[in-house]
Length: 407
Image 1 (cartoon, rainbow, N blue to C red):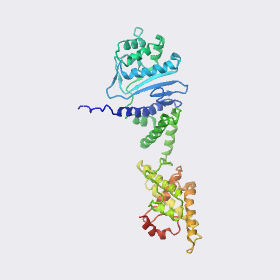
Image 2 (image 1 turned 135 degrees about the horizontal axis):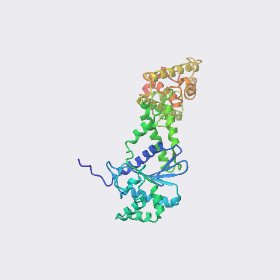
Image 3 (image 1 turned 60 degrees about the vertical axis):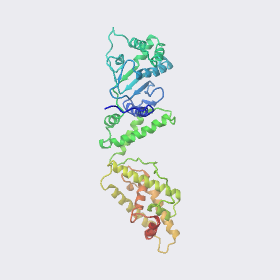
Image 4 (image 1 turned 90 degrees about the horizontal axis):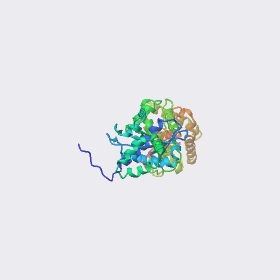
């Protein structure tokens, strides 16, 4: 079958390269000591700086299947062009640079580039040196690309040529972009239960993408360290233990604009009945949204025990009922509307500000995020046909009227 035609204006390959760059950086940093930092798009595709300040410049090449690297491969010589400039800038033989070329292709066995693969046996005494092989290669090239690079290379002394070339390592058959997630899951997430690794990886890549964007936009000028990844993975692992649940909707907002005046939901109508301000109603809507979405995420990841949410709601409703009885105890049938609204506001203040401090009202012991409790109470206040919690002392008597207004 013929390959589909390629649009010369398509940016697909370039886009894939950028995604590969960020994803590969994450994988390789996981394989290095924790005090190593990575910078993207600084001196090369990736710069790795170890704890001693030594720098490795890495060029990445995500190639089509079956691609091979030969003596005059553009991928190699373009990288050499970058590395030569950095080598000269940093003092040549006095520099602390190494140069890595990661390619998903393979180096041809008959290419002198095979001498640059890792763990190669020492060349025999009568074998030509790397410098001699490189000189011979560029001398026979008629490429407009290689010509200027040959000129720059020949500005080095013979000893500098050898020093420069001995700093280069080619790592062929590097992982392809689609293979990297499985490698991270299987080799670097063993402290996390297997059934949770996919979700933890999703969160790790989300955090990593944010860190990369901050670096590329200049919001952060520091490298990203390996220990930062270790810390994140450790924190995520803690969230997936039996007494905890992951919190993934902190700071999130709904796609639709929040309209506190026109929102028809019952829990919002309840807040209007006790005179809660528009700004506090907005906060309540956010708590409801985050708690609702968080529960859905926990359910998708199969993190909840059967009946756990129902039992949790029963605990919330029972505690609300006890406190309600205390707040409403001195009210009478003749109590003025102002007193009723004030009592309802007091009850709601308890729900908003005090419930998060009560350990028995956590869905699990280490889930302390306030929106989980607050939002769950709003979910109970939104239950139909009758809410399981309410704030205004006479709300249940007025519910038919309120439902008529909000339906």
